[in-house]
Amino acid sequence: MRAFLIKRLLGMIPLLFGITVISFAMMHLAPGEPSVVGQELNPRISAQDVERLRSYYGLDKPLSEQYWSWLKRLVRFDFGNSFSADSRPVIDKISERLPVTLWINVLAILLILAVAIPIGVASAVHQDSWGDRIMTVLVFIGFAIPSFWLGLMLMIGLGVNLGWLPISGIHSYGWQHMGFWEQQRDLVRHLTMPVLVSAIGGLAGMSRFMRSGMLEVIRADFITTARAMGVPESSIRYRLALKNAMLPIITLLGLSIPGLIGGSVIIEQLFSVPGMGQLFYEAVLARDYPLIMGITVIGAVLTLLGNMLADVAYAWADPRIRHGGKA
Amino acid sequence: MSGLAVTVAFIRRHPMMVIGGVIVGTVSLVALLAPWLAPYDPTDINVKAILLPPSWQHWCGTDTLGRDVFSRMLYGARVSLAVGFVAVGIAMLIGILLGAMAGYGGRMADSLIMRWTDMVLCFPTFFLILAVIAFLKPSIWNIMIVIGLTSWMGVARLVRAEFLSLRQREFVLAARATGVPALRLIGRHLLPNAMGPILVSAILGVAGAVLVESGLSFLGLGVQPPNPSWGNILTEGKDNIQIAWWLSLYPGLAILVTVLGYNLLGEGLRDYFDPKMSNRR
Image 1 (cartoon, rainbow over the protein chains, first blue to last red):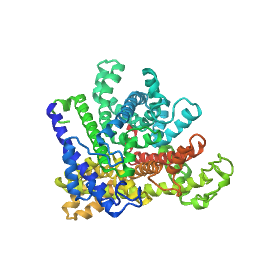
Image 2 (image 1 turned 60 degrees about the vertical axis):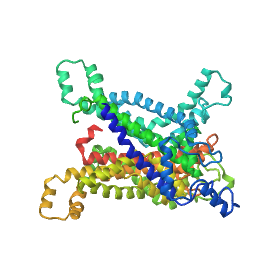
Image 3 (image 1 turned 120 degrees about the horizontal axis):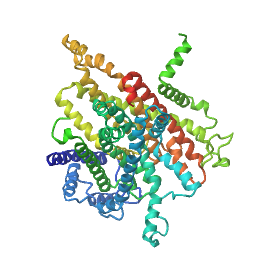
């Protein structure tokens, strides 16, 4: 198991290297310049000053040299300073914004698992019942619904018309003056809609996968054998079958992480959540190179770690892999 | 059996495909005929009709500049479908080329290409799309190209898998033994036999591209106003969420129905090509 982990961790390094090379090259080769050195903010800036700014930010050096110095700093976990007017360290900016994004995504994943697995199992066990058919229709709608539109509809319904939930930000006005529990309650109210909206796509996919996985397992020989040996139907379903049907779910969860991270941009923009997605959006518009690279690296690391975690969980759940055999 | 009976039987056996096909056909027709169907010019500003709720004059209401939302949505269908088709075309081209090379080009090419594919799959693609579009200045062409360049991975894997299994089949081995050149073998024997799954993934790809385009336009990085697109009408809906629900409701429904149509058609076709898979999904 340890060898497996180390191998996977080492395997991440070339992938990460490749991702940074591509991002760096694409960012710098695209026409245009960061807005700090451009003439958009200050049309009267002289050509000499533009040159000075360019050399100040190191933009006048060859691309390979810029990448090399960026990489050397990255190894020491130094992401450089943001190009924006405050020129704060990128790492500070990200660590302020990351927790809320992580919270929303982790809660969304938990919600997906908590809802999709029972639905998938129930649909498979009662295949072709009315409930199963209704779920099938809902799943297709869940796949097709644009998440930000669902968000808008929730905002209009629950926020504007009913006034139950706040429609933007993560804190109410006067948050600092609330008591501890009141603050938590306020946070939960603000995060409810973003989490629901983040979860919708995964919910549809996951319950579908769970259903097909379960259907496949239920027909397997070992289930028939167990049934013939008199194992009660409930433990066949929820212990034997469920455990085996969970395997593909783990992989799917790992694969869904890039989508969740990417989706944060839209959802955070929609609900004005000050998270990483919003930070990335602002960074991209200003062409804040160090910040964009920093967020890309963090996003890629999260994705790779998620995939690795999924593989580890898979190995843990599947004895054929755990004991070093070939699956 | 009469023609009608055959048709009814077909609909009963493949309801998903038929419903999906009807939706896709209708949306395509609407997009094609938009200039003739639209009751108003989609960019015509009318200061006397700002933010009117839906009525008989304006079926889906009017926006902040008094433009007719229904007409804008009809033209928006053109944008969405155009982006969907071109982006998927690009993705298919890249995916089939790389997949064919990986599946037929030997070990070396296979492991190189699949490594590359796995790496791109690890990318938070939407970040990449966003960055590239923002840098290149948003335009409909850039969107098509960027979505195409970031959505070929599924097809590449699919084509590779199909080729790997097809190349062991007897008719392919026979063709090779008789000295059919590789390119001709791929073009005449391998690709046509893999066409079913490729077509399915292309149709599902259109649905995905329509969703991405609407998301980009919603963020202001897609189709730029005054040109209408479903996504940028929704941006206005968000800005006026307290007073004009119709700006949010209808364009989203249009996206939902279109994407649903393509998904149903794709899934239906998959069952049609491979009936033994159908009860698993």
